[in-house]
Length: 273
Image (cartoon, rainbow, N blue to C red; front, side, top):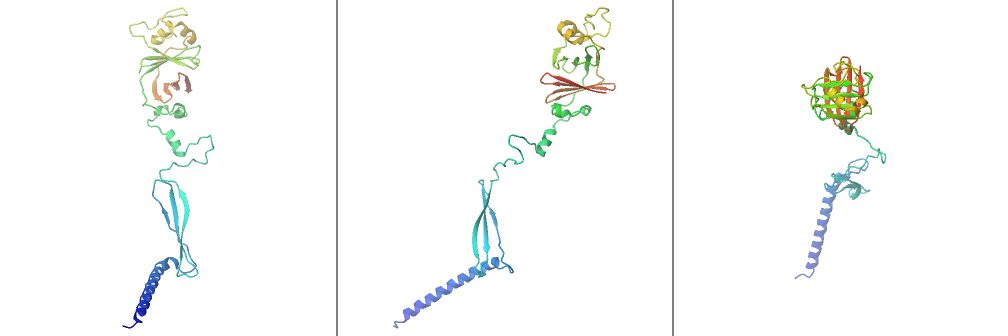
């Protein structure tokens, strides 16, 4: 047996391993060269990989940078910004001053868009929904009787009778309203008293349900005073409930009276002629 044969075999294996390593390096370089060698000046390619999780999303950039030896590019990983999770709350609007309030365009639409529309016959009242809020039910057109009290028709005290609930609303000069049950019926006389003397039927005097309430309550009679004209039904009536109370539009000839009966027991009147 030749003693030099083992040494030759060892050299053979070393050469074979070296060739394998060279082939592996060449294969790796061939994979990386298309990313590194784009021609012209060296370029940097970035790939953004967001992590899809419920936690804040971290973004990592994979950067391939050519070197002087364009055959062996340098691969680095760089940390980028961290974005909030998809289910995280939105940050506060920096345009809103601390302690103040702001209404976005969408909120403004929501505040003015009502599920139930105001009746068209109430359109003549300015800023209706800003004053009364949104309607809570459609308008009702049941008859309403009206009677002014005081020395003249330009007054700040009224009685209103709503046929829909058979109640008498007394609007007092201090801006407060109250209600009374209508206890008058057709079997009773139309006029019940005349504190000023003369004939019982001598107008103008409150009559029917208004007259009975006025005659039976001396304090109310003193507050309201006489009537400048007889009671009558509104020629056209629109009553609609709103979030802040009830709106009555009483149409008479060329005059429209808009009564606002608020839920806090206050009332206001706007007259259009």
